[in-house]
Image 1 (tube, helix red, strand yellow):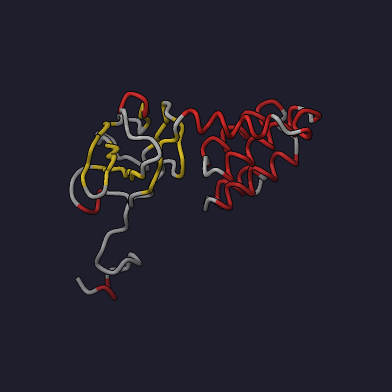
Image 2: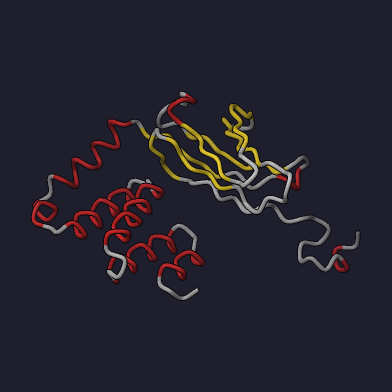
Length: 187
C-alpha cells in the first residue's frame, strides 16, 4: 500500500494499541489492568517480559478488566521487567512495552517511614500528610501509588483544589494530560 494514500496517518502500518498498564516501580500487590478498547468477543492478554522473553501471561476478561497479582508471580525484586498488552494475533495487536520494577516491601516501608518521621508530617492535617506521601511516592517512581493516594484523598475531599492541582500535575508529569484535564474539570 502506498503510505501517502493510506489515509490513516500511519502510512502502511496500523497504529499500536494504547498501553494502559502502570509503569515505574510497583508494590508487590494485585495490580488492576484495563486493556484498551476491545472488540466484542476478543480477549486481551497481558504479557510480562524479562528482556525479550515472555515470562508470564494473564488473560483479561471480555470486558477488558483484569488483575495481575505480582506477589503470586514471584518476580525478582528491584529488577526491570516490561509488560505489554496483546489483543488477538499479529504484530499490530500489541501495545508498546512499558517498564516496571517490583519494589521490595522493605523499600516501600522505608519510603513511608522517611515521610512519616518528618516534623511537617506530624503537624499536618490529613490532606497535607497524604500530599507528602504522594510526593515521596512520585520521587521514588511509585507513580501508581502516588495516584492512588491522591484518589483516596479526593474521595474524602472532592472539592479540595490543592489536591486536584497536585494530582493533575502528577498526571501531566507521567504523560497523561488528558486525564489531568478531566481531574481539573476541563474535559
